[in-house]
Length: 374
Ligand SMILES: *Cc1c(COP(=O)(O)O)cnc(C)c1O
Image 1 (cartoon, rainbow, N blue to C red):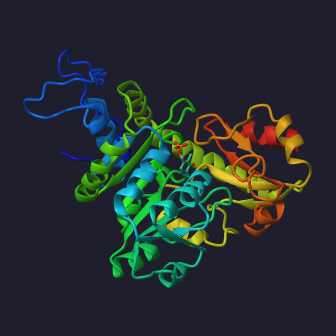
Image 2 (image 1 turned 120 degrees about the vertical axis):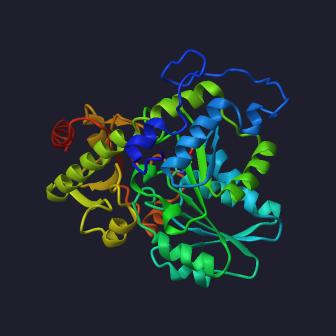
Image 3 (image 1 turned 135 degrees about the vertical axis):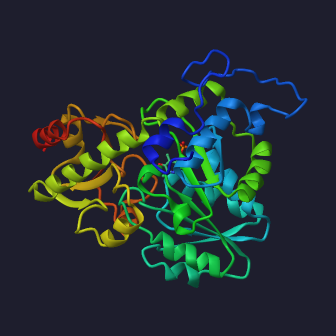
């Protein structure tokens, strides 16, 4: 009996409970040394009981065949990527990327003889135009950070299939509750579990989900790169995933309410949220995000964004995102601080822009907090 409901799967998949005493939750298995008669288990082989529990749950939530849990989002992303390429190969990235991924591409790939092109993803045909005979992978991220741009997942996946390329998506911002890229033809889904999957701003992990075949290929490289996660954090991730649907549903609803409020507020400039009809790719977001539009939004403050953020009471200034508590930051001061003002302007990131990770608080309190700070 396998439920197709995320509410049920988030609680039960990979969480059979304690086989020894009948407790309802999975025990934490701390052993790093196991008997080798049947299976060779070892933390860096990604097959200890708490690692497998998390992998089973995220695989169920992403509609994949198999998955792995890592010690960070970057470990999941870079291991998945490096497992798919070799010297001489070419990768196509969308140009709106998480800062860490952008930096990793810039500083790691060329020195291993791997080349890449970055394209504007708002028009999927740009990916097809960038394909060369050495191209192996297309890598996308949607919604993107911090402007919540949308990439048409189905179209990019179809282009990749036609040219026999592997597709990787960073699904962190959407979370597995809102968007399941494997259903749309994507091969490998990655997450920074530090964000919505952990959900409480207190752990760091990463995850990937794919077919059995590609997961095994990634696991073989992962054993060499060594970015595995310890049992106690795995337990926290498993526990967090049990409430992800409830948390993200509340964040979706709060973000929508707040985005609509911000659009009517005279002290606010542009508002970026894929759930708004004014978002240029709202119709595509609606199709590929059946669960909701997510808890991330950004907007321009007409006065000083620093003064505004300092006045907030409930909404805390912080760099990370996806927690139950609302957090806010200035991309100019954080994720995009290494760009010059002109470079930022070229990618559409105004110095007035703030990025808001909406929590699960009462939306009326959050709106009142924003009103008093404005
Ligand atoms: C945070 C983040 C990452 C990196 O994850 P870590 O857990 O910090 O390694 C990757 N992609 C996106 C979209 C992120 O927000």
